[in-house]
Image (cartoon, rainbow, N blue to C red; front, side, top):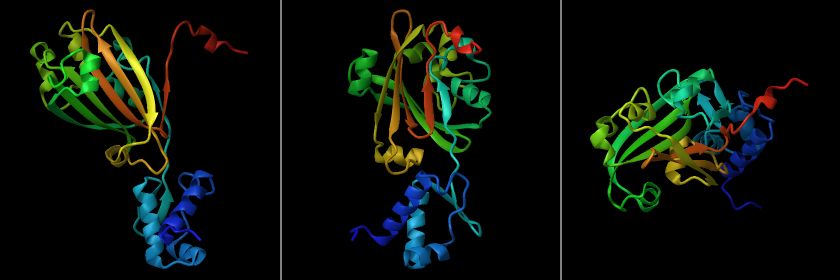
Length: 255
């Protein structure tokens, strides 16, 4: 016999059925009464199991309508075009890309002056503990948590670009803003990694059990300096990254 509480056994069974497509996105789950009969469980046990699935972001609940499998659509990000001013149209890269994909963007911000942690100091070639400006974004696509983005700028940049340290959004995007102050990003170095989420990441991104995060670390360079380090943390189940490198004219060839 399983040592897990019955509500967890119920949640595990329904989770497997959701993952296997028995209950596809948008499908309504059986009623509490039906689940109570199926699992020989009390209403409270059934509700606790369903609440667990809600907390994992797998299902939603509506008063009078029961529980429904959450609909999630994968977002495709072209990482080689992201922040490339040649392709910018409306606002920052995130807003432009999400809007152009026919989706709805929404993000919140916070700005802090922070001592540089060791990994950031190494990438920016500054002293550990020296002042950085941290601009932190919590981003959504169609009201679903999509990513968090933590960008560190060396403190010396605020003398030339003071809006970096001001609270709130920079509507045109920081890359374009810096370029307007003769601090042009001419190149970047990307690092891609995966791991399981921390508790804070799981909470912010509403990540269910067993879902990893995708970490995208981009260090940006001007002609002679390292000007920022951005760590973007994506939900691994809702995102796909693409790069375009070289001559891709053959992709459009018709068979």
